[in-house]
Length: 321
Image 1 (cartoon, rainbow, N blue to C red):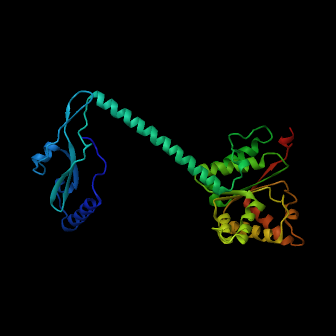
Image 2: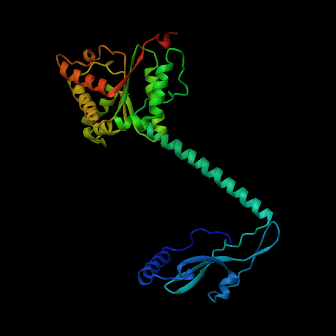
């Protein structure tokens, strides 16, 4: 018989649940008929049971002309049986034409569901990219369009393996430190890692020190902001992966150094991974030092070195080729 959708109003559903609960509580032995709270039967079967006197004109199969009886839902509510019929509920014909038509409908429905899944997935990815803070320029930087050559192949393979096996690295809090000269693809690989993690349902956050911490300063001047300073910091501390691009490029202030240390140290203590790109591998401490506060800069760099596997990328700037 043709399966139908949910035709029970909420009151009937609740009554069925209540009856089932009472049966379970009052009796440990039930025959198979008692255990069926509802089933689908034809009009003639319902008449034989004496629960309906309706006369419903059969429908004809549009392929073979066979008469198809009306069907309905037989329910048992607190000992009283009822037969519920919708105008669209009739037997299914088993002729070849009807079978082919059902297959066609099923295929079309599956294709529609697949399109809906693809749209939903794309919308989800777009939302996660928005949350990742990945800038417009880097939204297209993926592993697929990274230009591999003999010089950068090893760096590419390390970054790709890191993204593919992120669950393992996340567990140990292991990150990457991509260092080297300008224009060698460090940011592209960092953005590609970000993309790959989003596809795998992780939530990374990507940005420069200034752009990330700048979001905090906005909370100071906007009384209508939806997030507090601590809420933004907690996002950086608790996200699956924090990616800081071009670390050392901008000279810090006392305030930015303090916040950067707080974020890095919190992730360090919680074994949460970071990915850093920088052009200042050997000068990172001096680049992060504010006035004479070298101790904080040294503490930050020391934790980065302990948390990350180094990836050297020293070769000619691709932008100048």
